Length: 134
Image 1 (cartoon, helix red, strand yellow):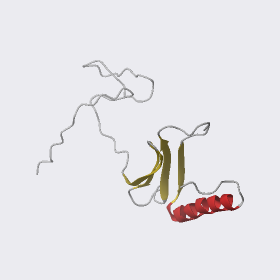
Image 2 (cartoon, helix red, strand yellow):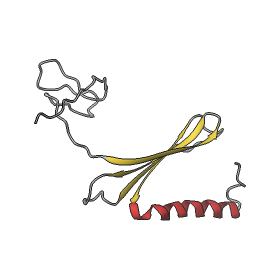
Image 3 (cartoon, helix red, strand yellow):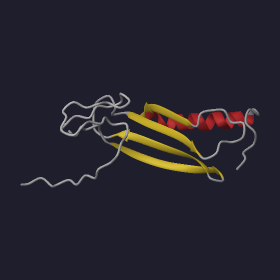
Image 4 (cartoon, rainbow, N blue to C red):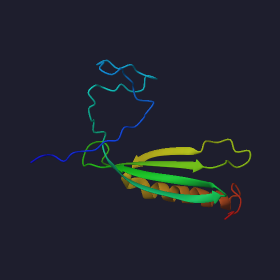
């Protein structure tokens, strides 16, 4: 049985190493990656992802991605990666970061959600945060 053919499209990726045609030793740009010749595929894993967003103003929103590595066993079997990012113009006088990343055990996702909801509710009750704006 013949394996199926895979069609690849050429892509310009400036952070990959470049090299002269016919050369077996690559010249590295930026020191980030070295590309071997001939090209060789490396499995870097797979994951399942859930994504969502919420609008916070005209052309401004927060997005979230929750990803879980595929596979069984190993050190990543119970790992969840959570990434929050704000897009669009920042509020006036805002000085914080607009990206947050969190890695936690899969079994503790609901605890973190309850923790965040609880601290926001407490902060509103105690006057730390004002009343809901939306």
